[in-house]
Each structure stands twice: as structure tokens, then as C-alpha cells.
Image 1 (cartoon, rainbow, N blue to C red):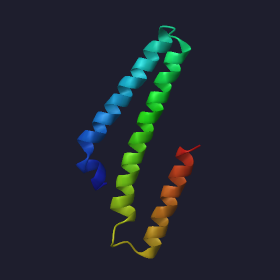
Image 2 (image 1 turned 90 degrees about the horizontal axis):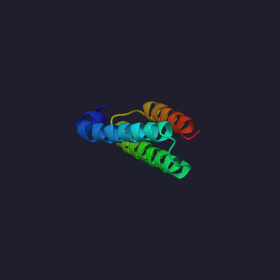
Image 3 (image 1 turned 135 degrees about the horizontal axis):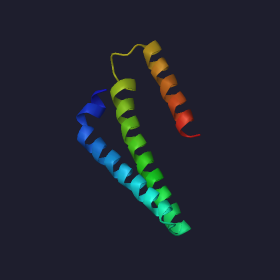
Image 4 (image 1 turned 180 degrees about the vertical axis):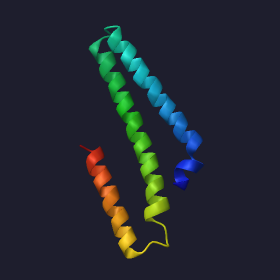
Length: 91
């Protein structure tokens, strides 16, 4: 998984930001914050997770599915795996 290794610092920064947003959401719910504030925090977390998913998925597609040394069978299997992952993610 070379793309996650080379971009590890950037990915970890994004993940830590998501952790901070989740902690803020927990505090907001615990402190009976206004519903709109809670909803905005949920939307922000969802956007951050979607951005993280897009970044890792793009790297995966470029590094693995686009690898020139894959056979047609390997490429088809990789495409099937990505499609299954996306179906699960988009539920």
C-alpha cells in the first residue's frame, strides 16, 4: 500500500482532524447543544470522512488498479473489489 505510506503524514493529519470533530460532537451532545450545531458538526464530520475516503481511494486506484503489470484477470478482480467497497460505503 505504497500510496498510504508515502502520504502517511497527510492522512494522519486528516484522521486527527476527524477525531477532533468527533470529540467536539460528543461534547456538543453531552452539553445539550442546539440541534443545528449538532447537525452542522455531523455534516462536517461526514464531509471530512468523504474527503479522506476520496483521497485514499484515488491513491489506491492509481497505484493498484492502474498498475501496468496487472493481468486482465487481476485488473478485473481489483475492479470488483473496489466496486464492492464503494457499494458498502455508499449504503
